[in-house]
Image (cartoon, rainbow, N blue to C red; front, side, top):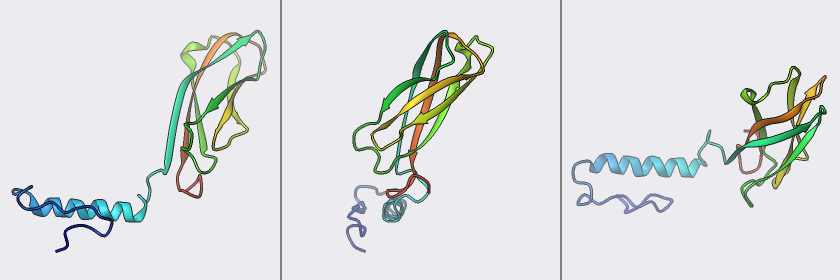
Length: 138
């Protein structure tokens, strides 16, 4: 048996794992397989944030808050998922969230109220996902 996998992951010596040597070799092989396949099914890059405060001064918005991703995290503009903390909202109109100008560097997180005005703060959360090195979806 070689001393390491094809990607250079060293197999443990029997003296390092005497009770579970075969299981450790299997684990090293499985890790090698995952790395070799590019973690099929796992996201390539992920970042999440919040709470983002949308301060409304008596209007319906939109209120935009710039969000900056960690430098170099994404190689393609990621997919964006949004959520609201409705426990902080006392208005009667429906809050809506949307992105603006999404790129690998960030986006503008927009909130507006459908059909009405509000004075106060609404808090939102976001999740950015890039599934593959060359594509956001995958």
